[in-house]
Length: 375
Image (cartoon, rainbow, N blue to C red; front, top):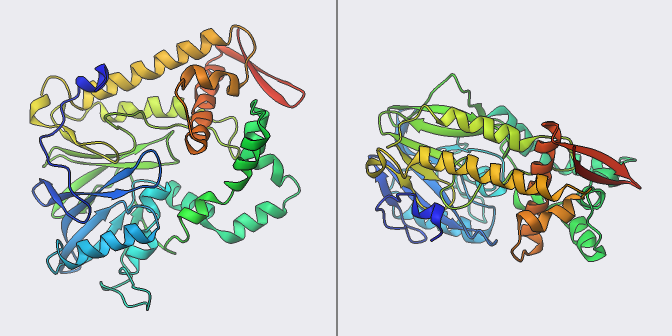
C-alpha cells in the first residue's frame, strides 16, 4: 500500500466472490465482474427497486460483453436474486466495461435460443452525452462511413499518435488494429433510453438519487448520490487507488479533458465527508470511519495534488520542445503493455493540452509532428 492509499479508510466489507452479492447498505449490493486487462475487475451495483408495480432490482453498470460476464449474471439471476427480476439498467458512462452488456441485460438476459430470463425490454437510463456517444461508437454504419471518408486515416488512433511522436512501426500497426476496438466490446446499444439530468433525481428503491455530472473521463459521466443512505456511486470519477484516466483522442485533438475533470471534482465537494463511496474499481471507502479524514474529501484533495504534480513534471521537462511520446515516460515511468500505452499516451496529451490551454506551453507543428515547449 502506497502512502496516498494508506490515508484512505476502506469500508470493512468482504470482497464479493464471482457470482455473489455483498450487502453495502440497506437494499444496495456490490458485485464484481472480471475484465481481461491489467485493471482486472469492475464493481457493479444492484439496488432493490419497485418499478411499475413489480419488485426486483435496478443494476448500475453492466460489465463487458463477453461469455464470462454473461454467465456470471445468469448465476446471479438464478440464485442471489431469489426469484426477483432485473427491472432497469443504469449506466454511469459509455466505456465498454460500464455499458458493454446493456443491450443483453435490457433484453432480459436471453440465452442462445433467445429465451429471456426476465420480462423485456428493460429501460436503460444514461445521460444524453454518454448514450449518444455509445450509439455512435458502436455503430457499424458509422465505422464504415469513417473508413470510406477521404481523411479517414487522419482521424485514426495510429495517425493521432504518430503526430504526437510515436515512431515505432510496430506500435503504429497495433494502433491500426484497435480502430474497431470499441465496437468489439460494445456490439450493440439499446435503441431507446431514459435521460439522466443533474436537476432531476433518479428514484430507485423509494429513495432519491442525485445525478452528479462529471466531464473529462467521458462525455457526460453520471455519478449517483443518495442523501438518505449517505452513499455515493462514484463510477470512474472518484477512484480510491488509481487516478481516473483522461485522454485526448483523434476525434477531439484539441480537447482539455483534464481541465474539465478537475473542475468536475468540485461538484463532489458539498457531499458529506463520511458518505460511503462505491467506486467502479477498487474497494468501497469512506463511511462512518472517515468523518474527519480518509474518505471522499481526502481523495478529492489527493487527486488535485496528483495532477498538479504531473503538470509540474511535464512543464519542467518541456523546457526544450518535446512530443507527447517523449513526455510519456516522465509521467508513466513503469513498463506498459500496448493497451496501457494507449491510455498513457492519451493522458499525457491531456496534461500537455491542459498546460497549452493554460498558456504555460506553446504548441508548434514541425514536419507534421506536434511539439510542446514551455513559454
